[in-house]
Image (cartoon, rainbow, N blue to C red; front, side, top):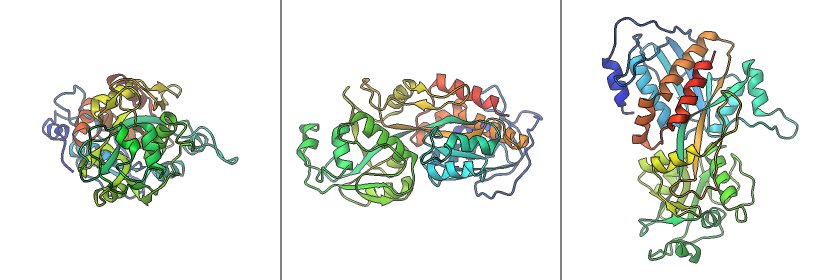
Length: 378
């Protein structure tokens, strides 16, 4: 993991003796850690990094794996007595582990569900019961979802929601199909068979991708969105698994978080929701996030994304990874540690550094709301 500009500056900018937010350790194990105890300040921020001494554990979304590892690296470079581990097992596992109280915070690409199934309590109610207070969904990472492909002879590809739905449902089976050709006029398409890969684990990426298909192509994709895949193809675990499947297969295609598509040098389709073909960029994703509606109360910052948007220049397939936290925890010192790390993660410098590894920073208005919510954790 490369060290961010923030980490490099932070390690040099130790200013005098700072008060440390002490935090006791727990029995949870982890692997990502660093040691030290000095509080430090970024050259571009007036406030010093708040350090804690002890451990934090998180689990969940693999879409945010690269982002949170970047934030952990820069935080523990500045705060060497802090040990933070994050296990990227997928959003479904993250929610379950958080609700079970097995980790200090969860990572999920979908907000906690308000409704339970088959008479069971909702995720919201289960989390509140574990916390002894309402649990909050705090958006931290904007992870665009790429339709990533590996097809010899295709350097540029545009897809509409209807065409994508038919590809992922197994109804379009070759890359030179007439429906693909219709939206890629002038492009010579090979007769290569299409090989779809999907997430075999419960995944927030799957949930958000199927929300886009269902909202933007409702007549084609009639299945309800969800964390479990209901289309066709071959299953692979986590973002890394589907990325490798596409990379090693001529004709391969999948939905995958942007940083994994970039890391594996995969082709990424332009998406035309009806307002023109849009390339996946930080700017086009930011435009879509700014249009999101608040769907929570107070500092519960769950968002309602408009997957069917036809706004020109807005990239519609995206996810927001939430950090799941107790608003008021049973361990006050652990809550201080969570608060300190999340303030660092949400800072402008760290968010900006994430662009280099395939994420879009939080829009300024959202960043302000996130910092306000983090300040309210107790």
